[in-house]
Amino acid sequence: MTTELDFRTTVFDKEYVELGGRREAIVRGGRHLFDRLPQAFEGVGQIGVIGWGSQGPAQAQNLRDSLGGSVKVVVGLRDGSRSVEAARAAGFREEDGTLGEMSDVIAASDMVLLLISDAAQAEHFREIFAALRPGTTLGLSHGFLLGHLNDIGAAFPDDVDVVAVCPKGMGPSVRALYVQGATHNGAGINASFAVEQDVTGRAVERALGWSVALGAPYTFQTTLMSEYLSDLCGERAVLLAGVHGIVESLYRRYLDQGMTAEKAFEHSVECVTGPVSKTVSAHGLIGLYEQLDADDRAEFAQAYSAAYPVGLELTAEIYDEVRSGNEIRSVILAGKRLDRFPMGRIDQADMWRVGQDVRAHRSGVDAPLDPFTTGVFCGVMMAQVDYLLEQGHPYSEIANESVIEAVDSLNPYMHARGVAYMVDNCSTTARLGARKWAPRFDYMLTQQSYPAVDDKAVDLTPFTAFEGHVIHDVLRVCSEMRPSVNISVE
Figure: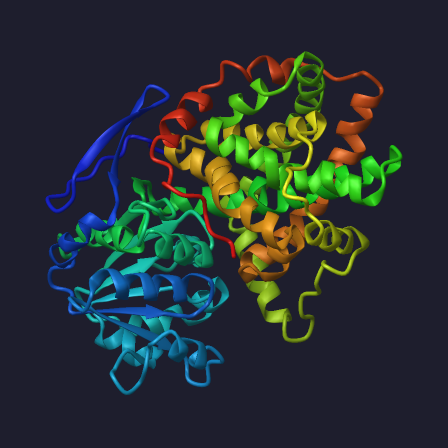
């Protein structure tokens, strides 16, 4: 997989950043660029936003607000969709032609943003492709469809552009920070972009225009396949399933050590989603370590070194499952079973009920920065970083998919609403992945990592690479492009 990417734009100001000794091209966003959007979308009279799941509401509203009528934004939904009333409430109406049936909107649009669920894309892609006019730009916010097409030996139509803009956060976060941007220019969710096919010669400009219009503080380049592999792997590793399994295993460990349920929750979940995430967001992983005193650093090193091998092994397994197509097939097969076997919720377990009480009685003071919890979380996170490095992903993508999305978007949301809330309310693909892989992190940490610590049999080799790791410089540069405000999760 190549990491040497570059692009040409005459509409936006491209700049280069040095990340770990590599040069990568980016575009910084901001509302001062909105007057360039008509030029970026030259030849586009209508953008169809298809779907009203996690990303659809945010992207449709952000585009409409940013474009100010220079390009018509229309929401397309399937007949009988339960989301019609929600779309109407957001100001998209049949009467003014901004809300319509999915196929009709696709056929009438010059740029089609396909934001329906992964399972729906896999089921309906043929009719969607048939509705696209030659010269249309097809936009994706996830590479799942590319993986599915490769798996079944199919392909995108050869007479349309295929681009991707992939915000590094959930749809509600994309909208919340965009709204904050009205008073804090530059607030938003970072995004990657990719051009899979360019038949119009305008694909790069349209993709960048899309990202800027969503409010991305900065946009970095990747490929659709690289994004698909890192994104699907990341949500099944540290971003969602991993953090779920980590905190469950730590909660039980602290209970076994004699903590009350509330203290065990504070030292596990609250620690990760609170002070750990805040510190890494502002100061990076190395800054987190530097906050610890000598004794706590020693405990961090033990926990880090014990957790890292588990993180590396599971990330490698997840990546192979995604790359082979097995993970896609499991999602599609599960989707066919959901009517008969709907996914249950995890929020009724004792741990998550304790969490409701803890969040309800917060004093405004952060939970303790537990060095063992910190070491376990950072060990798994760094293992994902290292495995994506081995696979040749761009540094910007690795930093976002392994660290920045966690500490700037997902973990703050979990801190406000709960890890269980996130696991129970994210996309179907992510929910399935969390249920499948979180127990693996939980069991392997419980069965391998913690006994090694307790038996004083930890090999500290993984930690020897920590302080001088290239990711610290990468995160330092990325932090300079961080949104100007913290994400709103109210």
